[in-house]
Length: 537
Image (spheres, rainbow, N blue to C red):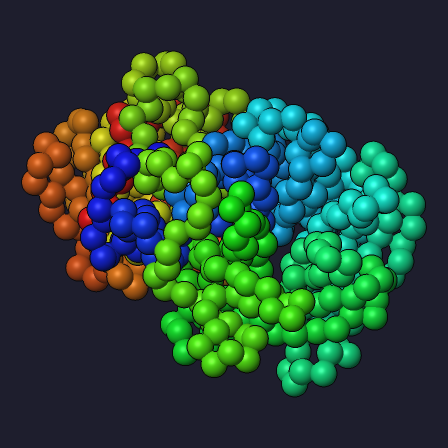
């Protein structure tokens, strides 16, 4: 993780630094400048735990920890492998783990998560940093999404969820289930309790991501609507969990640059403050996480700042940090890890594959202090968009530089390895065996998902081993690639910057790969990465 000592002061360009804490008792949004989509969070004692969607990436269900709601550390993944395992042996872009919910009940942590093609799952653990149970399918079916449990005062367990029109044929509705005491079996289906088509708001659509809470005798459903990039945060309340529900929009973009502020979690502090974590869609940078102060007014939450006092807030950009008491006030400033020296026998938590990994893809022991990737053939020759063996991580900031030190060992033309920026469009700079010698190559593929052609710039001549590769990302996700024989003097490769793009429901990623020209070839090609360094200005 990126850590600054207590008392450090961060310059005003905090979104580029990846550290939100300004060091003077204030923070700047976003608190996570990385793609942690659909965040949900809870407080247990003086610890905060956050989870997020992970879609087709493995391991899935990232778990982050914080003491103050501003500084976050990635500490685990609750889902080492996606299920069904065979289905996720290849990339299933945009499928897999959608918006999950985490809760603490009866001494255990519970995560309910949806797979829109298979149904609603539950896993549990005694410690969020430890091992989680294997997923149990609570309710099978296509199009069931965004589950959230609530144990009411009598101990009865309810589970609210939404619907994906792409699978179920319906959307804009929230349904309610009654589960057994184990939380694994549906006892009763109470049907639709909130119908977005009947909300008296013009253009009310895409009601999803519900979070179910209980306060002062009211049941509250926090749920975004209006779409990811343009929407808002709605809240519904009723005395009876089955309704009827009143409705209010409690936060929208207002006069701020924060588009679509919605989908998140209400948390409190030991001092009695209320806060709301939510995401903002930033295109290629993914869905970044913001923190809003929250207050209650006439039985309704108001999120962010409310300059005209009408009960509908707008996001704050800079604000006083939460009062979390002495246990969390003196912690270090930090952000999730990015760089990796590959000195451990385990991959850093920042890394994810495009599908469930296979044992023969990597070794951290074959050459100590190095990540060895064994070259794998791409399912579609020349198109890495469908390759499961890409090892990637999230964009960590608006601007940053990644440098890797690489050696490629190959005897077959077409074997390659390198540094990649991945999305619907992707580009990589690397070493490739061409005409019986290793060359530096810059490859770009536009609309890879549609089978667009791959273009390559090949620089003939021995690049030397080891070789250094670099990508520099500037505002607007503009990426410039360069290479070096000595790690000091880098020469740009390619004249026009590559613009990073989203992939299915996720932002762009950056990482490494090794690809073989053919399955079972004679080369036994592999790539050794000495380190992966991320520099955030």
